[in-house]
Amino acid sequence: MLYGALEAGGTKMVCALGDETGKILEQVSIPTISPEETMPKIIEYFQGKGIKALGIACFGPIDPEPASPTYGRILNTPKIPWRNYDIVGAMKEALQVPIGFDTDVNGSLLGEVTWGSAKGLTDAVYITIGTGVGGGVLSGGKLVHGMLHPELGHMKLVPVPGDDYKGRCPSHGNCLEGMAAGPAIEERWGMKAKDLKDKDEVWELEASYIAQAIMNLIMILSPQRIILGGGVMHQEQLFPLIRQKVLQEVNAYIITKELVDIDNYIIPAGLNDDQGIMGCIKLAMDAEA
Image (cartoon, rainbow, N blue to C red; front, top):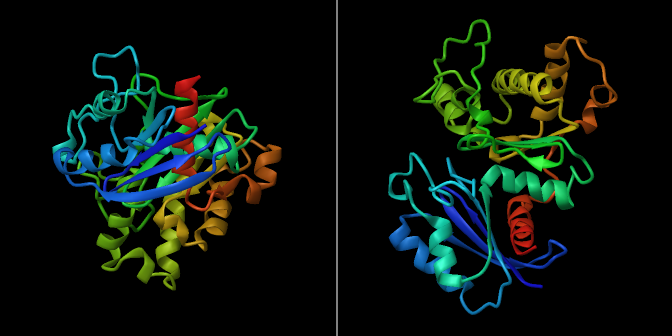
């Protein structure tokens, strides 16, 4: 079986073909400009390929509820040209195949749950920390949507003592995205994260905020595993710092086998940055079923 995968990101749209094993057979990248400029190229890529279904994992906020009148649309996104764009409707009209649709982070989590480091689990969290911060949640074996979908990057945090940075998020200031995303690091320190690798104070502070957010997620969702991806998390020195600080934040309030083995509880994404595309393949497979 041949499936189409569209990982719709804010800077690029990755189009790919894959099979039922999650194997990516080919892929191309198309810049995210405007629907008028970008969508014809995406449609042209998939047309004539003989795909059985298409999975779309998209930047948001989106409406993933099939019964909703705005299902399949990108909603109140800061990317103005894409606001209220019916991406599912456009692809369905062009390709006439079943379409699975979810957030970009739920797509990445689905890839990890199906073929990666969360395989076999019923409750897991995936957080991507890069240009923004997003999170996907698997609870009881199902991706969480609720009234819309989780926005884990916008939980409010308590500023670290001595840190007077107000946060970059225009809506919430000192939320996780406002304090810990790549643009916040650059604004706070005057350099991009990749150029700050040897500055211990940068990563101590970054780990403090990420750990605070993870502690909140542990107490609310009780996940069996937490997976961290995105460009900022390519700074691998963050992982031991985050694990140590999470244990400090939890403060032995709960003691579980997962927290005892925290090196295997808070882990990097495990599919070589292909988890998003692989999740799209699974979305397509589920749409066809």
